[in-house]
Image (tube, rainbow, N blue to C red; front, side, top):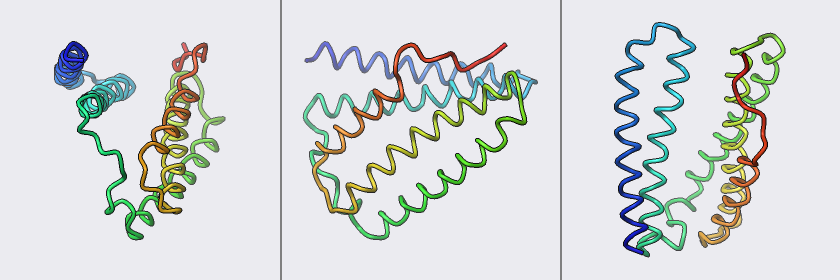
Length: 162
């Protein structure tokens, strides 16, 4: 187990360095397209760093086995519901403008659609678990595994087009 933790610590440092290095390069990108591509990669590295932290906690047995009570509060669940609704609206808007663009612009819209659909589905699933007062993280982990597998199926077409 310590070997796994060491590998995750190294990966976390790599993601941190990657984000910082690309931020410097991004400052020189004059093209909005290149700036956006670099921003996506920087944000992914930042996200991957947080994922490494979560995996390390879970591996060390420190991860919560239950959803915190504060997440079950009605106000919190309502904020999640509101976000799910906003994302559904955003997905509709993106689908509406997609036919009006082509090439790399359409590739960026496809990227946004893919990411937002995944976020929408995961948050919708979490909201449903919270609505029924589900406090076990095990059901959420199972839901997240299923959704991540669906979102990252091999053989998907590349996101960028020439």
